[in-house]
Amino acid sequence: MRPLEGIRVLEVAMYGFVPSAGAVLADWGADVIKVEHAVTGDPQRGLRQTGTFKVEGDPNPNVEHANRGKRSIGLDMSKPEGREVLHDLIRQADVFLTSFLPQGRRKLGFDVDDVRAVNPRIVYARGSALGPRGAEAEKGGYDSTAFWARAGIAASLTPKGTDGVVNPPVPAFGDTISGTNLAGGIAAALLKRERTGEPSIVDVSLLGSGVWAMGHGIALSLHLDKPFVAAVLGGHGSPTNPLSGIYTTSDGYHLTLALLQPGKFWAEFCRHIDRPELAEDPRFATVELIGQNTEQAVKILREVFATRTLAQWSERFASLSGPWAPVQDSLQVAGDAQVRANEYVLRAGELELAASPVQFDVSAPQLGPAPEFAAQTEEILQELGLDWDRIIALKAAGAVT
Image (cartoon, rainbow, N blue to C red):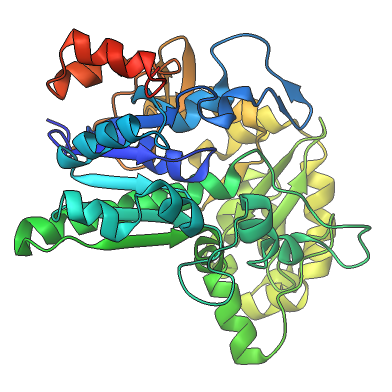
């Protein structure tokens, strides 16, 4: 049994952030009903071009990633008949999950007080750009603005002298991280309700998630009163440890070393690169000397790493006791044997998708495909107890699709 089986989530949300929270809850076993506009659906369904990638036809990974495992109902909440259906759905839900701005929630009648008037025990979860308080609480935003730019991530990754700033690595990068945070908050609120009977309002913002992701760097910046500065591209990494940094292989790939105790690992590492004499080199005899002579060590190691391919180094370092990793692109990650062994990428319908990162009882989540637009409308209405005459009347009124 998955941990959230028996929990029903009503998702009134669009794009990537909040729907990705719904996807995680679905991975954990919740029945997630996605409310989409009766005519246009979630605008994310129209997203075909992301960066240099263009998707033709269906299924569309831009939709599937954040919507797998859900059911979809097409509903016009601006119509009185649609509002009645929404209230019926709220009565049967444990969680109300939304990305709508405060003005939209008030206009359509599903702000906190509206929803709690229908179901006092419901957990009300909101995803926002900039948080629920402050002068900008009613403003919208995306992961590229609130998470990536405003939370300091872009500036902290962009080396000085760069023309412009570093962009997010992939679509919905901040959305997915923030959505996982929101799903965790919802799970905690459900536990609180189970123990105390008291429902909570759960808030997660893109800005708050970005600040949390930057937390270590922000703490250092506040303590030292200076901003975190990106390392120069092509630089080694640590100025006092040749075994903590990035090296280029003969085939143009890279690997990263994170042997943070160079004195402990130096001799073993030298054997793994077929340079055992470096372990006896007086320049590197102690951890202090290694630190003082890091520049010389890095120069030597760069020459050594340039003699073998990434695959050859990966095979050689399989028995190295310290942490290291190949620098992989998104396609290489999907084929990584360790990723596959842990089922971090799974099939969901016709596509393979990244699984949400939490596993229970050493088992991967069960992924289902994202629903087609409004595909379960009739099924959901029948579960609410509506007969066919009423369903047909709702369709005729344009309240449902």
